[in-house]
Image: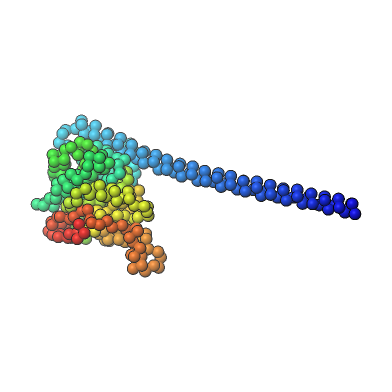
Length: 372
């Protein structure tokens, strides 16, 4: 009887030890799991920090290269005569180092594949980069009609000094007539001397080499050729502006801006909680007032260049929106119902189209933004 009792006590003691050991193991496992989770979170946090630092470093590198390039050509301009442009050429020497965003043109424009390093001609620039907003304005000669001075006055006069410091306005002369380029440079240096000297206003030009010869031979005699060239003009301007700013705003040379437009635009962008937007419309007309993230511009330009011979650029913008946002097999009507979260429309519009003489010779354009 005593022996059985002792055996029972032994089993009870062993059971207590087993339970205690099990609890200890479970506790250690939970502790280990917690440690592993903490370690995993630290690793993920570290990777995110490194990614941010990498992106920031790449942006700074691009900006530094851009500034160094502009300084080099500014020095060359100082040595040249006062009436000459800062840069006549459009092909860089093989020793010049620049962001290679223009190299993508060679994939879509075969005539450029044998050319050297491509870059627009710089008429006047201080090499501003690292700002929040780049505003792009493409202009061509409309003969007896001009709206560019009015447009620049409206755009620049309605910025605060702080907003000027955080932006760059780029006028791209997309005309093969060099006399028009000289007239634009002369006008901006006379009427907007302060903005040119501070670096907020730049003028570039697109050399004829960028265009296919077949397009130049047709000399824009019909609207289809005019639209083809216009798509290329916008693409080149976007590529030039991309490394300069966080956001890119597309304007045209015959618009006016609302008072405080820049403040309203900046506040609206900063107020958005969702980061999934595709682009923002500050005007409903054509390609006017469309705001993009600069980091997305390459994807947009790729698409525009794939189909630049088929449709106007504002229609291509609609197409890429449908391709990017609509699911496979989803009815377009249902997709468009969801577009507000991706294609954001700001009301009232901040820009109004005022030109009546179209950039296409002989055509009048009386479209107005009804939400302005």
